[in-house]
Image (cartoon, rainbow, N blue to C red; front, side, top):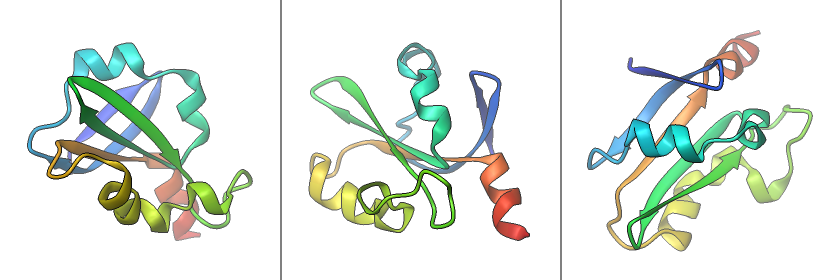
Length: 99
C-alpha cells in the first residue's frame, strides 16, 4: 500500500491510473479545502490537474453530491475519456470506518 502525505495528512493511494500522480503538481494544487474530505480524486484535463473531494456515508460533512460511492460514476461522466487519474483515501477515514 503506497502512501502520500499532503498538508500533514496521510493518504493511501487507492488507484494511480496511468501514473497520474505528479507529486510536485499535487502539492502545489492541494489546499486545506481538501482535508475535509475522506477521499480525493485527481484527473488530468488539457494538461491541468483537477481535484475533487468525496466523503463516505457517516462523515459529518457527507452529502449526496460528494458521495464516495459515486467516484467511479464521476470518473466515467465528468473526466475526459481514458484520462490519467488517481484516487487518494485519507488514512484516518479508514480507521473511522473500522469502528
